Length: 283
View 1 (cartoon, helix red, strand yellow):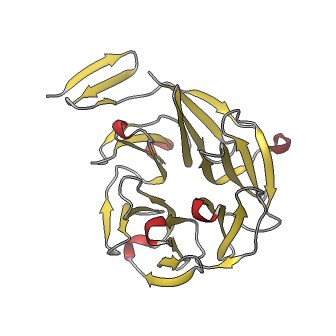
View 2 (tube, rainbow, N blue to C red):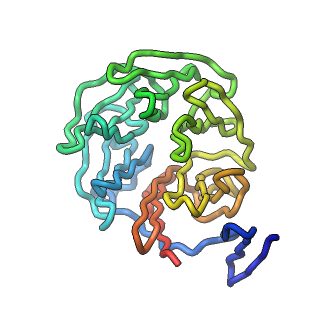
View 3 (cartoon, rainbow, N blue to C red):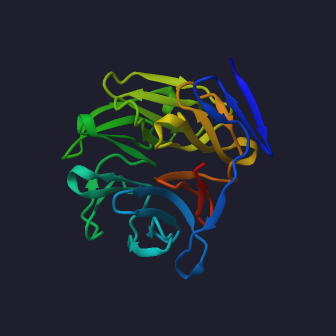
């Protein structure tokens, strides 16, 4: 049996096992500082929860701004010196970050010193994801082919085409299922890839999305997506069914990362200019 409870602008739905927010949430919005106060365009983010770092790749400045994830102040700025930036991931096993470059490869960034290593050729698109269980990288090239590269040498293991993945925007691992990866495309449904079988399946959503983030609290059973909803915004979906729970939680947002602590959940979002941090106090 389902139950509804309305409180101010929020509507809660209980199905006997979970309580979901079905309308607008209340957030504190903070604009993060940028070097020199000059607006930047965000091209990707990464949160290193253990080291308390938030990485924000920028265009056209060609820099990665590294924020203190607790104070939201700038810790340092990594100058890419002409290296194109499209995405970044943490490779814990090698104590490094991997930055995906528009110049068809990866640049390793030392996790301790933040020094940039030499280009590792491979791939060449907007995004990639580490498949840690199979010691490989999942990416896509500019032709739309999905590519699986073996580690540590980034050798090509598989390369195959699908009409579903012609233009890949983001690739994200499913933390609840280590065999599965979400592939976000520019003009099409959300795709889920099984890395063990290479099978693809589609998830139809009410609108296109840019990025997804998984709530670190499993009991919440939520996936957050940034997308085109009513002009752009942050939306919450049921993690099992992808039913829409709430939308327009933030406006014109493209990339998401999130942090959690005992007293709050903080969602870092960025779209277009001026990255923002949305902070929700736990209740």
